[in-house]
Amino acid sequence: IMGLSDILRYILYEGQKPMVRLTQELQLIIEYINLEKIRYGNKLEVNVLTPDTPNNLYIAPLLLLPFVENCFKHGTSNVLENPWINLTIGLKDATLEMKLMNGKGPVKEKEQKRSGIGINNVRQRLNLLYKDKYDLQIREEEEVFLVDLRVELIRITKKKQIKELTQPQSTVYA
Image (cartoon, rainbow, N blue to C red; front, side):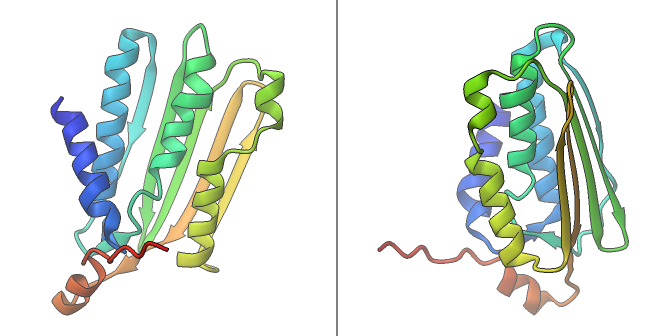
């Protein structure tokens, strides 16, 4: 319950900000994976490797979560035997490099034609927020989904910049 509460709190409060600390975003991913581990029990093999992150690296909130969610929604939930996920996140200076792989089951005909809204939204956000500062490759092989993402993060050192970039944005309803 505490893990779910942390995730919901993050989505409600941090998701409204233009930028969050990378450490917060990675913690969200870990909380989400931990919840899924409870759901799957010992049937799921999960390998997660995240770096120690400096506190001055910032990322748009909820940018990485849709990729991880898709691993569970379209991958492990369709694999009957030995579902697995492998997530490796590294840093090279201020560039985040994420490699996400998961096993997948046979593709159903109706799913084959469908295009995911979540990934399309992430692509649009990447284009808007990180224009020419990211590379996203998504590949589907016979038994594996692969996501390779490279994003140049924002490094902030001045307190004034931190305050400006981490204030919630007002919501405009049309």
